[in-house]
Length: 327
Image (cartoon, rainbow, N blue to C red; front, side, top):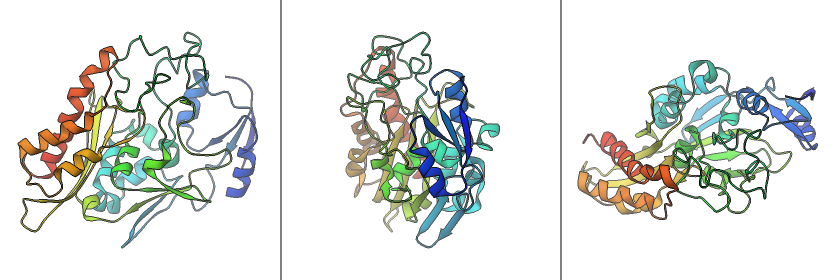
């Protein structure tokens, strides 16, 4: 770590203004920034502290949906009775993330902006080639150890997987991200690596996440988040699925369904082909399993991560079967 200047923002406008300065980084819970600074990836010239700003920690719900402030703590959101009742996939995705200690410090905005866990990205002393960290230097992961890397949304420049859980649930439930001056959908907020893997979101310099808005809906109320990982706690997903389901009055036909994947793509991945294949169909195990395989259309394996192409559809199918009471 190197020396940096510290600025305690007095307001949102104050924070935005200072965040436009070259080398400036925002500080909220600090759990990601500290990690990146310790491993030499983040080397801020100045840190802009927004952790104390008022009005950004609220969880406000009404008939139209819920607004979650960017500074709300992960644990507080996960344990909120309203979130657990009306947006269970959101609560579950948060409780399956990190550890209790981290969830008590980490903020919702910071969670959305967490960087990849790619070991090549996080070890600049050993691996100089990383387009995400050093654009144009190459991708050391391609041809390397790839068990935890992405199979969807990759490019010749980057195969790093997006590590978060909450964002997967937000993408599935059509959430909107409030950036203060504009609002974008959760799907639009994250971008594919393409030739510029160093750019992970549509955030411009000086912008910041202010809040997350999730619309109320039957699929949100009847939703779940299933995460498969190498161990039961404090581990990132090998594959995960956020699913919301609404049935017709007959109890057998799918009226609406939302599906998003985590742990397998370079960004939270909306599986629209699966949704389209199931709407209007009977909730049958065979139909579900066949439709779930559509999520892997276009998947590209890089050696040891090939297993994800088989695992992800099974995770989707299991989540749907669980929701439908067929598991």
